[in-house]
Length: 93
Image 1 (cartoon, rainbow, N blue to C red):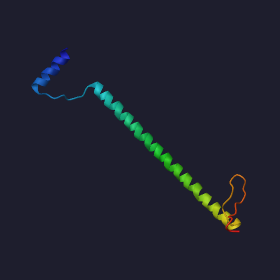
Image 2 (image 1 turned 180 degrees about the vertical axis):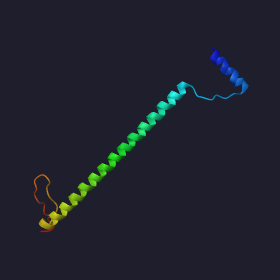
Image 3 (image 1 turned 90 degrees about the vertical axis):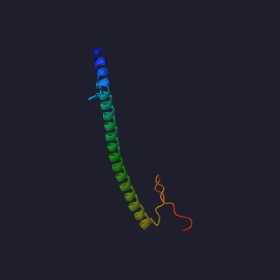
């Protein structure tokens, strides 16, 4: 009770608090730590995303190169990916 009395006396004198309560400090620290962890995780995910996009682009470039080879050698790149059969365009014949 003495704690509340001294608080009231300080209020009456117009004194402002110099420090927040330990409970408020702890809550703020927890929130900021969680926010920082979330931001770090987002950064990590974005880095992994960028690496995956680079891999996808590399595979697309490889596919384009093979398609170019197939067109040159077989006249088309329209191939059944499961059987390897060439699907010649009807209009070309």
